[in-house]
Length: 257
Image (tube, rainbow, N blue to C red):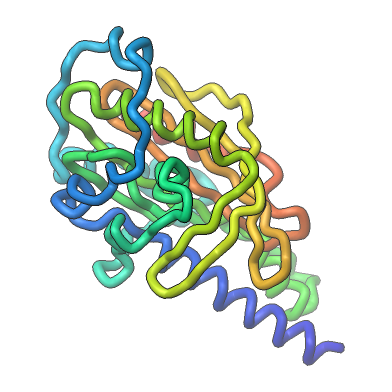
């Protein structure tokens, strides 16, 4: 029994690390501008008519605005490695209108951002000196892991991209299949939630199939000015992610101002 627990824990650890690494996409700005908008539905006029035209921030400016360890207590924050970056063209959905959600889940800003910045954020596991080593390992697997990405847009780009995410949530409620490089994964359902953040936001609970097991994750895409912030959060604890990572989201909104 102990051997099977250890093997399951090690396997799940490998899956979780792979999930964070391969989901850390976004690509270079030129790639996203060329690929990310494919399949995104055009927003209604009401979604874009209120905000004035804006000029996108640069990659360097976003790097100063994205959340860091100093902004959060109880979290580890690290940059994405160069080899982890996945262009939007490698994340494809069977139903084109679902692409904005698939991209937001995969560390890719939806739409056509002019610049981006990405971070991996892990909640620090609670330490228990009396816990059995194997139980401690299994407990660590329940840590919430969030992919955070900022995207900055010209003109009405941020409003349009967020509108496409909201529309994707409605049209893809019954799920969709997403191809990530050579892997295919199934999102079984997308439940639209109510979560207030930034000037406008879209939030979802997603149920996915992970090798026969159901994985519950959370997704929030919010707009602050002409910047979108996306938070895709997973956990391998029983029941998956139970709540949105409010402390993380609040810290990011505060930095965006």
